[in-house]
Length: 398
Image (cartoon, rainbow, N blue to C red; front, side, top):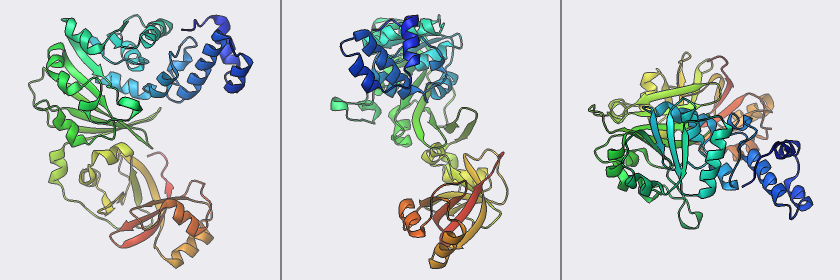
C-alpha cells in the first residue's frame, strides 16, 4: 500500500483535477505514481460522501471498491447516535467510516475486516485522523467473535449484500455474515445490536426476521433518495418494543425525523382533500414514503391525500415537521387540451413531475412542449376530482 509522504500528498493535490487516464499513460510502469492516481480517483468518487473525512490529507483508500461502497459521513454520524455504551464492535468495518465517527465521541471501537489491505488502511487512517480508541484487526468477524469471550455495549454490522458474481442480494439471511443465524451468539456478546440493511427490503419482513426480538426500524435517506434500513435491538431491555418505525431524512444542515408504529397506522383511516390555490402541497421524502405511514401523516399533520394512490398531501396552512418538501399551490386545473395550452403559454419553463398519471414525466413535458428548469413545479396527478395539473412554488423558511 502506498505511503502518503508529503511529496505524494502534494502531487495528488496538484493533479486532483487532471485526466487520470492521461496520467496513467504518462507514468506507466511507475508503481508509486499509479497508486497515487488511484487515490485521486477514489477521492473524486467519494468527495460528496466524505466531505468531512477527506479534509484529512493523509486519508488513504485501500481499493477503488472501498470508495464506491463506503458509508457517507452524514449517515455514519447518524449511526453513531444509535450506539449505546462505551465499548463497540464493528464486525464488518470496510473503510471504517462508521467506526471513525463512533470513535470520535471517545468510544472504544474494535473494528474487524477479513481483507488485510482494508484492515491495514483502517489502522493508518485512524492514526491520520487522530483517533486513538480504534483497534482495527484483520479477522473473520464471526470466528473472531466466537473465539473471544468478551461483551460489547453495542455491536454494529453492515453485512455484505453481494453474492457470487457480484449479484445483489437483499434478504438478511442471504447476506454475509448471516445476522439471523448469528443471533444467539450476538445476544451473548452485546447489549445492543445495530444492523444495517438494504432499503429494498420489506420493513415487515425485517421486523419478523428477528423472531421474538422486536427491532426499532430506522429508514434513512436524503431529500431525494432512500439510502438504507437500520434495525436496532436492545437485548437487555425488559421493555417490550412496540415495533417503532422512524423515517429520518438527513442533509448537511437539517434532519427530519418522523416516528410511528404499525398499530398507529392501522388505527387511522385515510383522509382526502381537494387541492386549491393558496394551499400547501407536500411531497413526502423517500424515507417517509418507504415507511408506509400514509394515514398517520394525514392525522399527525392535519393534511389530506389527493387520491388513494397519489401520495401527495395538502393542507390549508403550513404544518411544521411534515416529513417532506412543501410548496405553495399557485394554480390547479383539470388535465385536458385547455390546460395543456395554458401551461405552454403561461409556464414555458417549469419542472414537470407526473405521479399516478396516464403519462410519464418525460412524455408529459414533451406533449406540453415546455422547457424544464426554473423554480416552479408542475405536478400531474390523479386526485379525488380526477386527473389534474397543479402548479406550485417552493415554500421558503418552513
